[in-house]
Amino acid sequence: MLAATVRVTRDLAAAEESVQDAYVAALAAWARDGVPKRPGAWLTTVARRNALNALARRRTLQAKLPLLVEPGEAESPEPSRVPIPDDRLRLVFTCCHPALAREAQVALTLRLVCGVSTGDIAHAFLVSEPAMAARLTRAKKKIAAAAIPYAVPGPEDLPARLDTVLTVVHLLHTTGHTAPSGDALVRVDLAERALDLARMLHALLPREREVAGLLALLLVHQARQATRTDAAGRLARLADQDRKAWDRAAIAEADRLVVAALRAGPPGRFTLQAAIAALHAQSPSHAETDWPQILALYDELLAVWPSPVVALNRAVAVAMVHGPAAALDEVEALEGDGRLAAYRYLPATKADLLRRLGRHEEATEAYRAALALTDNATERAFLAEHLD
Amino acid sequence: MPQYAVLLYENVPPDDLPPEVQAAHGLMPGRVAEAGGRILAGMALHESSTATAIRGDLLTDGPFIETKEELAGVFVIEARDLDHAVALAKMTPIVDGGVEVRPLIGFEVLEGS
Image (cartoon, rainbow over all chains, first blue to last red; front, side, top):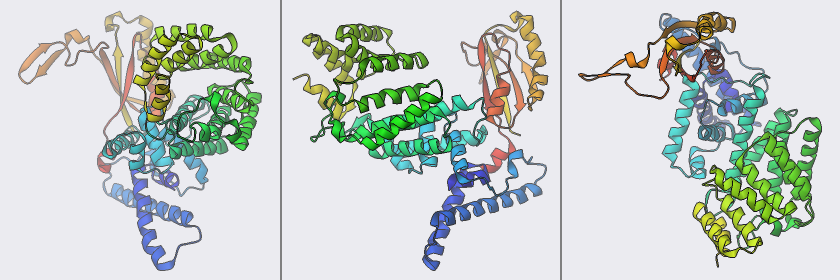
């Protein structure tokens, strides 16, 4: 509804106001006449009418102040016949504009595209509600002042801009999947919002292979969600998870998406990550996993996305194919590189490799280092077990 | 159309700019117009060592804020939106440095606040 209204106002603040006015009108009208058959459509119509009225008032004001105000090109909106999904897409691209800071992109997407309350967003990102409200206000002010466009980018800009959008959705899911701190390992709500967004993007941009890749990746993560912790709430490693409890339908859907994306052209980073995740998910057991294939996919992933985090995950596959000693060399090289100095999974991976090599004292030291870097209570408990 | 200031940060002093870069600066208004924008004003600054800073009654030699990259010039452009403004600003010839795009406060913004 907000997206459809912004299309009329071209101004987020004015659109939000129109939508809020529509809710107020609904309270009165529905109490009097009963709830209409399609309440969503009713609200959207009223919100857009409010917005158009506000614009008309503004135009009258401008006509009376011809010397003060130059009417811009964007100020002749017609009641739109463009379907609402298109508006949602524009809104996503505005919220995830690269001129906004990542944290603002994430917060705006949750607030304006998903309709999550400011308080809930603040809670999810562990900041106070006034701080989150201020962050949102700053971002909206920048959108208005700098005239960040409310539009789907043209073909030449689309790949880079889409990558930003997908990164934001992925970040939302990761935050929901492994909350950086707190007691519950999974913030189900955020993860589900991210999955909804990925589904929406895939429906609106069915030919974009990386969108299919992201959706597949989130589906596999979601399919394994229930088994990431055991009955007592303790963290279970991939090797120890109960594969029978994984959501087979979601994994099959992910697999279809990955296969179609891989066939359509050279894969990007989300498609490759999804391919790796799907391969893990389809293996009957950890031992029977096709590790050489996983390693080959990691090589491709590292080529399109040279990130130290990818290199660290690749080291895990190296351990399975070439043994823990070879993997340890790679992890130690990453340690020397320094970019992962605060990344808790680096010492955790190193500890596991050292343990498998029988170097227990060094392993204990690495577990301590990993413990010092994590706030998540479930992950802390998992790491601490190895210290006893 | 919204207006933006494009702030040029260039580490090469104006006198040392290669002739082709100086020529490219001269071609900017035409290129911007071809791309559907307009340059409304532009100015190039002498090196920051020629600046005088004033704080209250105190005069000091040099720019108000010392930065690694020197502010070398400013121009004002008109563009459809931020994406258009960024595309126009990217045409700025820079040897070693970069540019910043800042929206200018206009009547529309004042009216909304």
